[in-house]
Length: 268
Image (tube, rainbow, N blue to C red; front, side, top):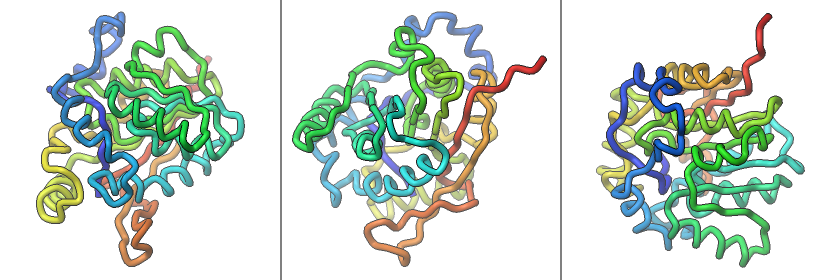
């Protein structure tokens, strides 16, 4: 019921702070949205990114439904795409195989090296960069048809900053995809209580409950950055369907969910 990204977590600002992002952070280059402690924590598993039975197993299991949901809303063939928080490249490689032209960003250099090596071995062309989305957006505005940011927002100190960068990177007719975890007792019970402690699917300490994000909060961040939400879906766990791909897309957004956004139309 959860996923790992090798991103960065830390103290989370309140939603009111996030809603005032533009006023508080006029220059994203002065606001590096990272935590050394979190980078080090997730870098410990860098060598296990492509072990489908290892601690990152759930990312491999959830990837097919992420890809199917993305492909449902956009044409990936020749689409210039950027994967924010790409980790070891699981989603990035799937995007390339679907025909997209992909750049992957992550601040964990160990994971980026694993991603580069795996792509090279698979003879896939992916431009991996160890840089924040905020910094990349300063030099690549309005450049990408598709922006993906999956299982990252709950791991960064300021998710509104990443949402804003995603909006900056997007072409006027592009689409951005987010996925994260809702904040409620059920989400805590399944993602932390069950997945981390009871079932031990992922390492303890992967998630912090107060960094989870309600769909209404993520929608507000998107609107503040000039985006509008046009699709929302939940991610459910149904192991009786398939042992290798037990996750399914559902209407239940109470735990894991995905959100698709595009640039808001200017009203006269």
